[in-house]
Length: 130
Image (cartoon, rainbow, N blue to C red; front, side):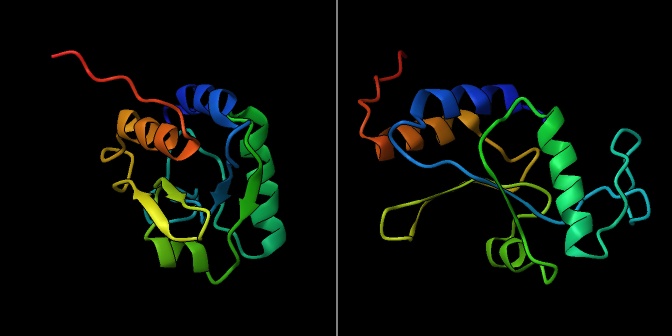
């Protein structure tokens, strides 16, 4: 995730008004996968323990300090939310999706995400200057 610093700023700004989590799903660019990364050194997860270890390593180096949840080995969350490689959602208090971002990394719009977070958190959103 390229813009974790900005996400951390949102987490700090709004975490007293709503809960934040990120869900660690299957590795999109595993070293032994179809599209390996030159920078990410994580093998495909074969067990939940593998996924937990990879998530822990990612959380340790990431500026984003929101709590981390793990997807199961059937990739239930990733599949249900079409989350691979990354995607942002906001769930309302009733559990329904109130914001569904586009798939990342290219479809991510952090301005739109933050506006939706502000609305859900009950924070007045200032009008944009034109």
